[in-house]
Image (tube, rainbow, N blue to C red; front, side, top):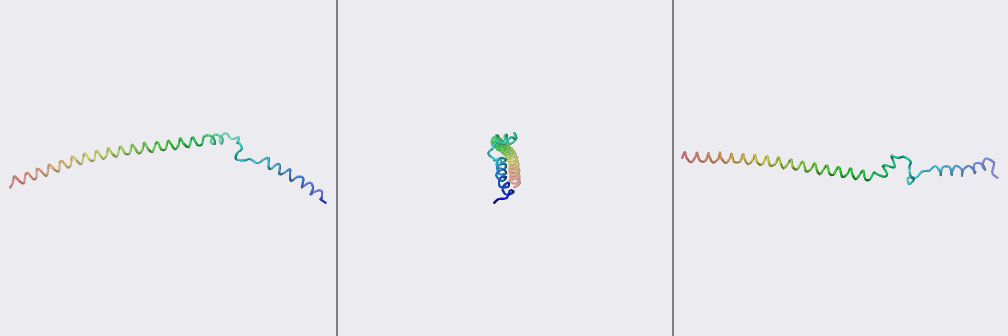
Length: 102
């Protein structure tokens, strides 16, 4: 036969189990935290906006850098053309001076 203690312990176990089961929370349950519900609702749209903003910034930065590089290249090319013309003029004047001295 069961002693009185064993009988009362057997009866208290299901009560403890019921208490544990009723206090469990699952991820699918709604939380009362307003911050968590905000991020649960708006995390994807915020992430999409941030990604689009970074992409737009990168495109604008790349375009600006390309335009500056093209401008610098054009300036350097024009300076090279001017210097080549001067060199050709000096060569022609030197060649003309040699032909006259002969």
